[in-house]
Image 1 (tube, helix red, strand yellow):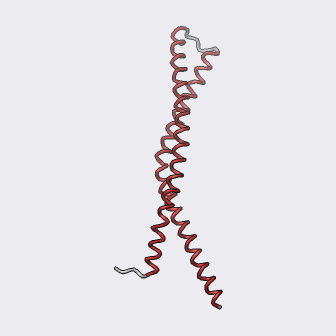
Image 2 (tube, rainbow, N blue to C red; image 1 turned 180 degrees about the vertical axis):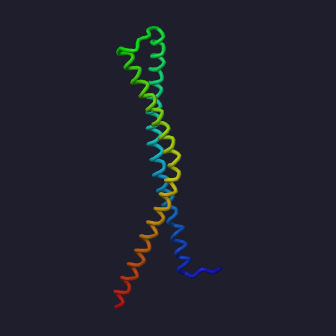
Amino acid sequence: MTLTFKQKQALVIVLLTCVPAYFIANLRYDANIDTLDYAFEREKDLHQSTDKLLQNCERNEQKEATSYGAGRVICDQGAQAHERTERVMADLEARKDHARTQWYQTFVIAVLVMNALIALAFAWRRWAQKEQAE
């Protein structure tokens, strides 16, 4: 199979646009993962803190079994915060898993945009040469 000059030129351009698209996709992926890791660590710390609060609540409940009072309200709020952090941590894990799919999407979009810009530049150059020849 032999390629014409224009086909070879197009192939080289597509391959050359893959390099910056790869770096763009990696930059976005790394930034996204760093943000998710930071948020996950914050939620993990909060989760551990509410875990300790719930352990203290269990110990206090064994000593004094009151269903009313400030301590019980704090324990209920701590249990709600604990459940909320579990949900947020699960959501962050799912978003980390989805980040790889986003990497591919970013790569393809970057390649398409760069190739469209190059095609536009070639069309403009062709038009400018035609105008100059007239």
